[in-house]
Amino acid sequence: MIDNLKKILNEDQDPKAIEKITSKLENLLMSNEEVGYIAVQKKPAITVFPDSIVVTNKRIILCKPKNLGLSMGFMDYDWDDIAGTFVKEGLLGSDFSFSTKTELTHTVDYLPKNQARKLYTYAKEQLDILKNGVSINVNPVPDTEIEAAVEVAAAAVEIEEVPTEEVIHFAEIISADMIPPVQDTELEVPIPHHEKKLSELSKDELFDKLNNYKKLLDNDLIIQGEYDRLKNEILPFL
Image (cartoon, rainbow, N blue to C red; front, side, top):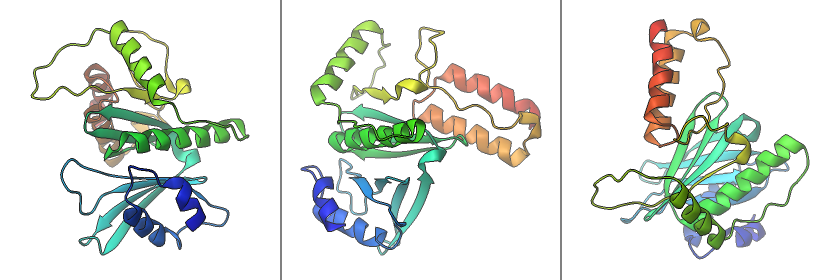
């Protein structure tokens, strides 16, 4: 674990925070499970008890401090349950999100950009291994390439100006096999297919599904029109 930490740490991370997380993970890791990367939340103000996200060769683990940092809450998702991963960059940091095949979406915000990019790269590698059955070497995307892609996208797509006190410029990195054919001038993020027909779901399941769609909308992963369409499909069954 200690040797692996040297590869995980970079200039954006607090060694003490990483050491604290890994000490709690030691008894949670399965046999043949290795930590690939750890990203720690860094809000603009002082973050006393930051959230963190851990990716291993077997799963994604969300770590949330509880009881004033005296304990830690963990939520984990196996890679075969993950439908896609997303990164949204802003001036004050990046948001890393992942969606599951049961249409749940989780987001850890205010991650340093360098950490979010390495997190995304490792996640993409694991999803490729799961899909193709072989290990594929995936190198972190250089900053210059991402910035160039953002400039091209900004020139090709007309973005409506919204009056705000602070304009946030972000790049959204989406796995290529997650992008559906373009049917409109607006970009849409795919929604995993329903596992059951809506008529077969209970009211609690329908409410959960509606709530998950709202989370996707709030995180700018779907547009308002897509959300309204999905909501209108569910409402007749409530």
